[in-house]
Length: 177
Ligand SMILES: [Zn+2]
Image (tube, rainbow, N blue to C red):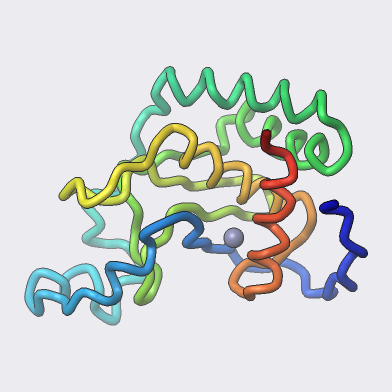
């Protein structure tokens, strides 16, 4: 059922890091009117260099997530096909320590980002949504983001355009259940 004819994948090569705001609740932050002072520190014009990003330090990947990733990689490989293809990317990133976990989602322009992947396999993922416990990201949510980024990389689907995001989600969804 999920065997769609392959989209004529555009030949855009991934040159920059891709950022995704996959998952629930990611739009809420931009809809809240920002407290002027506090926000400015992180959302000012110089935000891109992360200088004041005190909450963005990498955290160790918790055992429960490591166990879940291990199990997921095994499962995805057993499924074969596309699942196995992006599992290979995921495994390589995971085994070579290219997966960085941050405590919270971070700001990319006006959006909150839960995951970012680079063509070389580097990935950055958010454990929780934010420090105010506005929402909780379960282990499954983190796994989803991880698989989503792996699929972006495995299938050369540049991030940021809706068609690619949809296709990336479809690929991951097809490997669930
Ligand atoms: Zn994405």
